[in-house]
Amino acid sequence: MLDIKNVRKTFNKGTINEKKALNGINLHLNEGDFVTVIGGNGAGKSTMLNMIAGVYPIDSGKIEIAGVNISREPEYKRAKYIGRVFQDPMMGTAAGMEIQENLALALRRGERRGLGWGIKSDEKEGYRESLKRLGLGLEDRMTSKVGLLSGGQRQALTLLMATLKKPKLLLLDEHTAALDPKTAAKVLALTEELVAESNLTTLMVTHNMKDAIAIGNRLIMMNDGRIIYDVAGEEKKKLTVDDLLRKFAEASGEEFANDRMMLAK
Image (tube, rainbow, N blue to C red; front, side, top):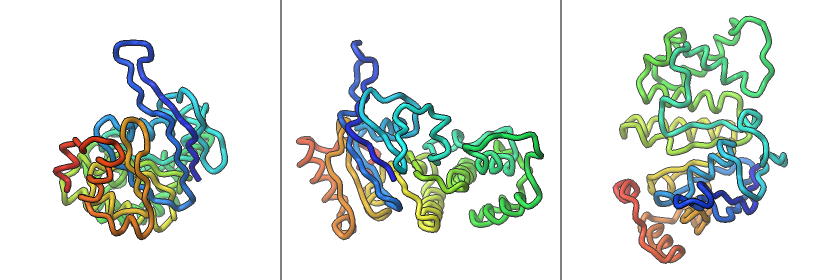
């Protein structure tokens, strides 16, 4: 479902601020893989997701989704393949639009826009049923502006929007990091439910090592723009946080230095 082949990216090339963000990344995801991604600050985790989504152009290499080469496609053309949830709950929704209008936008992702009515009556019923699953009472507030919702409510809505069209690939960029622990746990449980239900191929960047081990069928660790550890199946299930810290030290030759991840032990 996803093939990344020898992808490289350097920011501010030729200047004093030059930063090699990706150093020949190679990654293959089969359909239905749920891969968690961990690594220290500046490891290249978010850059990798941005390269897949088309936020920045890659310097070299190739990215394919479902056999289609999207390496040089602009971000808007990749939208029909990709669903994405950001760390900032404010980024995935249009604050000035109604809840149902946001869902309608998500349902039409990648399609041509016509001049018909924005939301049909049968659509509304579908949105209501989808919103009920969140357990937040939003099904009774479909005409409310999204800007009135809490951060947790908006992130849950963003997740629903990202999966509404059953994307080829779901990208989750620390999507629970800005939430309080109780809300984060709820959004994470909803994530697992939606991914499993539609068998979505998923890449989830997280700073929480316990979540990285417990969720999904595969885990990769990044450092200095490279994948330094890749584990799946039963071996992944048996991992502990201490195992990950030791693997990082072995693969990178240095100790793991990320306060948020250490606190998440």
